[in-house]
Amino acid sequence: MSYRKVEKIIKGIQTSDGAGVNLTRIIGSPELNMLDPFLLLDEFGSSNPNDYIAGFPPHPHRGFETITYMLNGKFRHQDSAGNEGILTDGSVQWMTAGRGVIHSEMPEQTEGLVRGFQLWMNLPKKLKMTDPSYYDIQPEKIPQVDFEGGNAKIISGSYQGIKGPGKPRTGMLYHNIYLKPDALFEIKIENGWNVFIYIYEGSVKLDQIIHKGRLVVFNQSGDLIVNAGSDGAQFIVVAGKPINEPVARGGPFVMNTRDEILKAFDDYQRGILDKPIKVH
Image (tube, rainbow, N blue to C red; front, side, top):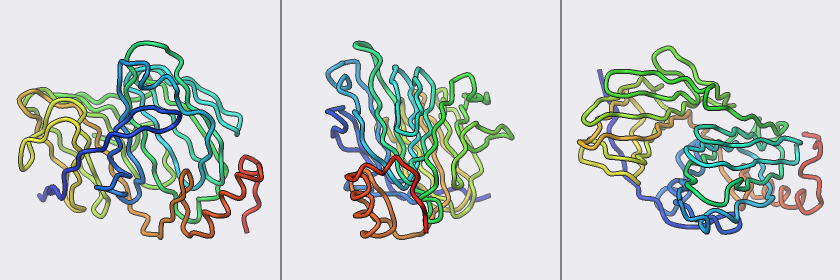
């Protein structure tokens, strides 16, 4: 049996987004621009309201999906497709921007801890102009699989025959893993898929001890095996099937060509981004 090898270890950069929310950007940074099909991974986490109170006022997206996983905190999501929901501890918001949506994510709290992740996942050309959609996944709908030395919360994809509620438009898995000190996690992943883990508590032992705040990218073949360090570990494991198409970025839009990006900005400025668009 072959196991995936570490290809690179990345530390995110401190930045801000929205109206001034402080966060760590790991994918979408100078060190790792993207990991097909993943365009961006942000970790947000603070007990200081000044770091999150400004939130993310209305802003547009087109051409990809966003998956927001709230470990702690309470945010309200609203969008131009008529969707609205509350993110609370352990819940997930899954939005397909498709042909275009304008949305906001604003805190529903003025104190206390806010912590979680936002992942952007690309859409293939044939789906970039699909209708926008959105759904919440409440924590009680996320199955937990217990195993010797830890557990896995299955957001999307499957583990030990248990399938998560997330419905990605392209092949992917997203699990949240807890390991006791020195415990082991092992999972089969499709050959050819890109996979990473992001350690947000504790440490893991791979070729070396890797501490929290690091993202580990593995090669594309074999099973994934991760050992916790002496202090245990909590990490997300995310894998996806590469789309292998050209990627053009322009702020909140991700398309295949520069002309499509310019068209997205034009549609937004003309106020038609959140209205039906005929696809030719």
